[in-house]
Length: 284
Image 1 (cartoon, rainbow, N blue to C red):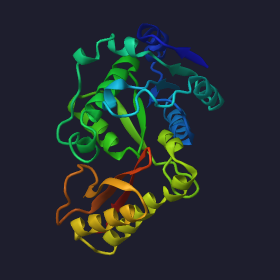
Image 2 (tube, one colour; image 1 turned 135 degrees about the vertical axis):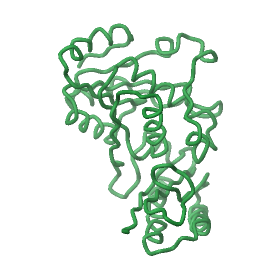
Image 3 (cartoon, one colour; image 1 turned 90 degrees about the vertical axis):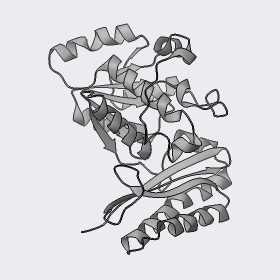
Image 4 (spheres, rainbow, N blue to C red; image 1 turned 180 degrees about the vertical axis):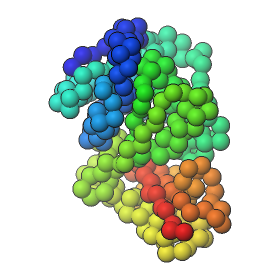
């Protein structure tokens, strides 16, 4: 597998693919790859002639008290996993290569409305940093399609809005969340969990599924449902940031006619901040 670190060399390498009308897929990651990332790569191979996986721990999407310096970086291990998965090209730039060394002066991409709620409320600036790096990777690679996991549901909706608003010629494919056998959504940050915390962590998904079942059974007292879920999470030792019932596509508050919901949550368990979601479609 070829690993490239420079923007110009990447553009030069993929140029002949584009000139011969071959389809290119991009899978942006921050590395420390797990089975969820490899599922994205697998789907990318099905969707395109060539796949570019990027690994870049993006400082713009980390807050001042978050884990940028300690975020697990496992490049050699990641290379081996990608090669085994049949990926031919890895783009692994440095911070200087992507931002020129002056983070305070970097142009940022903001998606108003979607970026300031839910996770955006608890992680100010996170989604502007995320949208900025995704937009830049789209400009660098110029993919036909890009793939993102549905675990990061709000992120996926922000990217879709950005692509639509800025007329970016990229098809966005959401890939269902990959879970451990007990239901825990796979995440690089799961390794922060102690053994005891790891045994408790699947409860987040179970509590969201219970809330989703209540919606399917006709309950529409959204605030009470959210409060009940928050209490359950607190009772088992988690520190929830939020549980929210929202319209699936817009992340707005549900209305009387809403038929497609998403239930989202974020909760701390020790050092690990867990996020998850469950989509709910009501038969009309």
